[in-house]
Amino acid sequence: MLNESKVKLMTRMAMYESKQGEEDFKISSYYKKDYRSFHTIATIIWVTVGYAVAVGIGVIAFLDELMENLNMQFLVMLAAAVIIGYLVLVIFYGIVASHFYGTKHEKARKRVKQFNHDLTRLNRMYEREKR
Amino acid sequence: MNDLIVWRDKLQELYATKSIYIDKAVQFILALVTFLMINQNIGLMKAVATPVVAVALAVICTFLPPVVTAYVAAGLVIVHLFKLSMGVAAAAALIFVVMFIFYCRFTPKKALLLLVTPVAFMLHIPYVVPVACALVLGPISAVPVVFGTIIYYMIECVRTSATAITSADGITRQISLFVKAVFQDKTLWITAIAFIISIFVVYTVRRLSVDHAWKIAAASGAVVNIVVIVIGDIAFDIHTSYNMLIIGNIAAVVIGFIMEFFLFSVDYSRTERLQFEDDEYYYYVKAIPKISVTAPEKTVKHINERKETGEIAGAEPERRPRPKSGQMEKPAVRKKKTASKVKRPKSPAVQRPTRVGGNTDEILLAQSLKEELDIQSIVENELNSDNK
Image (cartoon, rainbow over the protein chains, first blue to last red):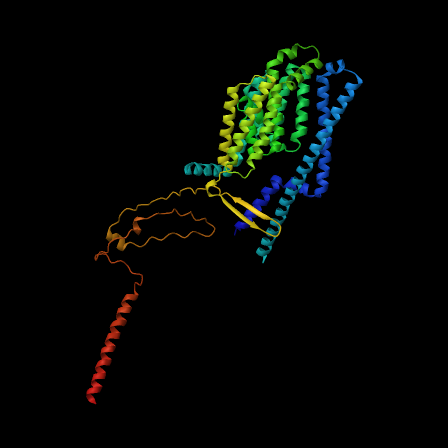
């Protein structure tokens, strides 16, 4: 005899496992602080790479102008602008990444908790059936 | 209005049941429109710029995650630019890399937003995007919207100044021309600034607890778009088409209203304001009920053929077959009033079967016996009195 509530529960769990489960289990294997820190650092590294690429494109595009105004004062000002821009970007993305990955961990943890709760319920159902 | 709400609920129900197919269809259409528009605007590589290739790519992208569509679109742009100049293609590839680093790393599932903005530009409704994104998503959607705007102006730049780029001697000079043409375009920056401000304004107003917040937000977003672009037009002399600006923003408001109808349909006339407190806070709560209309149920009226009285009296009542165990019973059709339940006048010719049935005779017999016994006891009493 089919147990409808058991089938529903198992379907829900299977759907979760196939969709978000894999990523959620990976996320929830970290502590929130570790997960957030790790991804914030990774984001900062990626932002640095991205910024370097953007500055590189800018330098190639404005190479003629740069060569024309090549003096110490101009170079110092340019370097300062590039560094300030980098710091602003890194701080912005650091804050955004920290918040984003913190929230992501929280949500994943909540879903995994619900999954574990469902697992316990399913286990109880099996035990009841055995009796 | 009620009909519209019922229709909306039906649509939502349909989406809930068929969401897999609808999502895939939307993904396919978006991919196809994007690839066709890229081919139409910068279809320099003739082998790739055919509709067959666009359809094939769209079909493949439909069965892959949404972010793949964005990657394929970027790849297609790079392939076309490669025909123009290797340097320009490399510069475009690096610009895409920067975009993916700054946006797609976080939310690869929403990478399609990068495509929506250029497609909206090509359909002449770009102002819809910031309003819609701010209503549904959040202020962070400003990043993909701005990137999408840059992609559109990049395509537009190639379309308009392809000859100038190719005529330049040396890869470095070609890259320089291309990057300058894209990023020194004042229209790009004014549009991007208008979109960013519009997104922040729409998002802020939408979250206010004023009545009709979504409508006000959509309208204010459109006003911000118009005002910023007109100011930019006057200050930097960028020649914007005012007709398109106004029509596009009217479309944005209309789309905003439609989105409100589907996503935030509430009845402001029944707003309730509550006030209570606990140990730590005072609460001022505004509760607005959602509009919901129950769909009228269809009732099927069965009118049985009138049978002869003799047949009714003699016929055995038809029994419903009991469903076997494990077999699902067919859901019963609700009958409003069947002919068999209609009251009929009692006729002496037809004796309706009573519930007690066979007990009637017993009751009558018992009554007659009781009467006889009573008579007997009366007779006995009288005889006894005479004897005395």
